[in-house]
Image 1 (cartoon, one colour):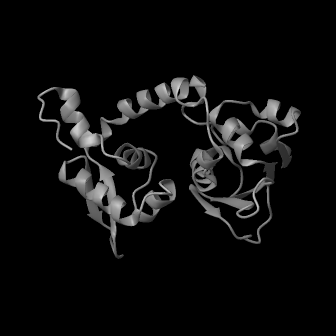
Image 2: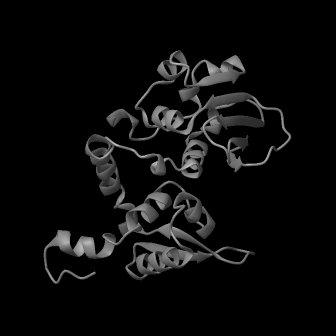
Image 3: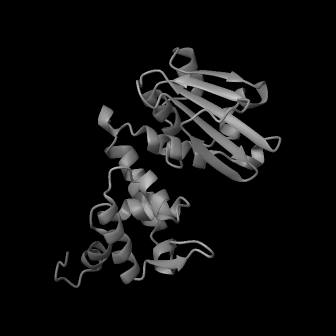
Length: 222
C-alpha cells in the first residue's frame, strides 16, 4: 500500500504495515530462519501469503535470503535495517500488554504457538545433564493434549508423540493458565495454589521454574 505522503510514518507504514509483516519480523527476531519455522509461529498464515511477505521484505532490504548449504531451500536473516525494527516491536508489545489484552478469546489460545514460545524460553545452560525432557498435559484439550519438549545440548525440540524418554518434569494445566503464567498475568505459585497448575518432577527443576524457563519478554509489563 502506498500513502503518497512524504511523512516518515507513512513511508515506514508502506514497508511494515501489511498484515502479518510485523509478525514475520517477530519470528525472525525470535530466532526463526526457515519457512517451516515461520509457519509454526504464524499458524494461520497461508504458505502463499507467507512467501509474498518474505519476498516483499527481501525486496525492501529488510531481510536477506541465503541458500542452505548442502540442502534444498533457504534461510532468512534480518539485515541491519531489519534489526533496527526491534525497538518498534518491543514498544508495540508493551503497548499491547497495557491496552490490547483485556479480552483474550478462546480462539486466541494457539497451543502450537504457546509450545513454540515455551521451547524458545528454555535456557539449556541452566539445565544439568546432556538431555532434559519436559512433558506438558493440557486437560482442557481433546486433541493435542500431550506435548514434550526435549533439550539436548543447546537445542530444543517440540514433540507431539511420546519420545519414549524419561521425563524430568511434568506440567499439568490448561492452555489459558499456562499462557497467563508465561505472559506474567499470573505467577506459578498463584496458579498452583488455585489448583490450576501442577508441576512435578525433579525438585531442582520444580522449585523455581523461571530459572530455566523464562517468562515472556513482556511479562514485566502485565
